Amino acid sequence: MSIISSLDLETEQQLQKLFPYPIKLHLLFKASQHTPGSLFKKFDDVGQFVIVVHLASGAARGAYLSKPPKNGGSDKDAFLFDLTTTNATKISPQDNSESETVAFANSQLSFGKAFRLRVACALQTFIFVHFSSDEVFKTNWKEESYNDTTKERGLKDVEVLSLQVVGDVLPFPWREVSWTDRVREDLRESFVSHKVMSESLKSIRVLLLGPVGVGKSSFINSVRSVMYKHMTHMPSCGTCAPPGFKKLKSSSIRAERGGPATSLTLCDVMALGEDGATGLSVSDARAVIKGHVPEGYKFKPGTPLSSQSIGYRAEPGMKDKIHCALFLLDARKVTTYSDYLQKMMRRLQAEISDLDVPQIVLLTHVDQVCHAVQEDVKYVYTSRTVKDKMQKAADFMGMPLSFVLPVRNYASELSTNCNTDILLLSAVRSILQAVDDTLDDQCVCASSSAD
Ligand SMILES: Nc1nc2c(ncn2[C@@H]2O[C@H](COP(=O)(O)OP(=O)(O)OP(=O)(O)O)[C@@H](O)[C@H]2O)c(=O)[nH]1
Ligand SMILES: [Mg+2]
Image 1 (cartoon, helix red, strand yellow):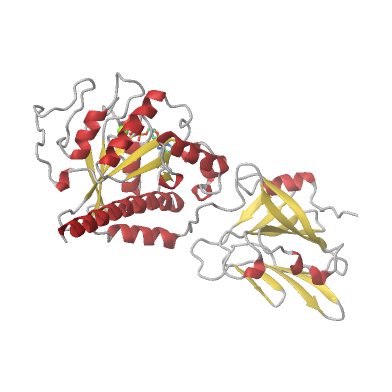
Image 2: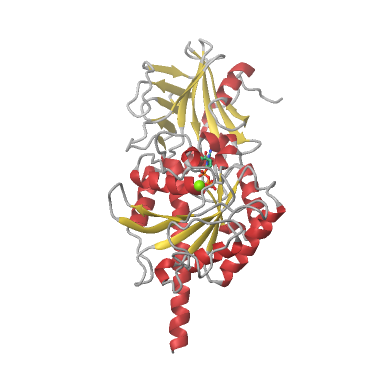
């Protein structure tokens, strides 16, 4: 006979609301049906879990675990909750808590002092449940203990359910990222301390290429916001921008506001056109990459830059050239861009390869194709839709998936956010690495040809 969870449909729907993605629950343990001693043996070796304590009042309390408790180590995604048929409250640990939030030892699972679940043994084995107020989880639960399901009033049942993510979100990320403040700081520090692998070059010039509204200026603004730790608003970006940005504008990224320059300069240009009549031409893009185009130059569709143009740099130095090209594509539009744009971008891609300049594809607006990513950028590598869009971007460009990086630019928010920063800084790290690898390669080639 199959055993059914005591969660009624309405309460389960409330529980579902605590997760930004659709979930399916599968009952593993029910204290009123299984022997108490089997409680912790029911947790699978992998997966995510929910523990529900059904109280006699009709309400329920419990905990979510993002991994099996017996594996040890911290579970920073774990949280507690309060449930009724009409409401669900998520109780996450305080962000800066130093202590382990979840501990499992001697048949006891503890979430700080807030919630303890123990298999105890006196004359017989029983389940012991304890709730309390807590510093880390900030629960305002009054101190209560329950003893097995039948021995004491107040407790109806204890259940363990495995949680499966259904639909858009994959059960495990396909690229590993740690979404912690620590990682954000490490990425920021390694960016600030990065030195270009060539002594003659202080700054790497990175060109952003893509159609109108893809997020070129927003990416520059976002990277700057990450470093300044507050939102910055550049006039060339988004709604502040004059219609049809047409210039070459290079922005040196500083380590902080008024601080020293980092090794990264991001170069914004006029968008690529979706047809032959508008947008940056291949020949102008080539001229920018080779360093012939002066700063502030205003592109004129139909009239490419020539050696007669004002400010034309006839003999550009290493510092004037582009050292990495970013192709930006919008995740919402990657399957509907015109054939013209695709041909143009692939042609540019081939020309830039010939010039030995590394290239990366940035997929923007990933928050606008997946509900979970919109809730929190940390789902970017578990979102089936984002993975699919990244593959589509790779196919569009004719480049491997490993060259495609998702980013979520700051658009309407008032302050920066740890996980969005991590995704942006990871893109910056990949750009710097790609340039370093290319310079290293050129160095090896130069020294071997000198031998
Ligand atoms: N939600 C979201 N909005 C974005 C993202 N990137 C850009 N935007 C928004 O998209 C709009 C266009 O962004 P821009 O940065 O101005 O685009 P652009 O590529 O510089 O456009 P042009 O200069 O006209 O070629 C703005 O309203 C941005 O706020 C993103 O990743 N997510
Ligand atoms: Mg722009």
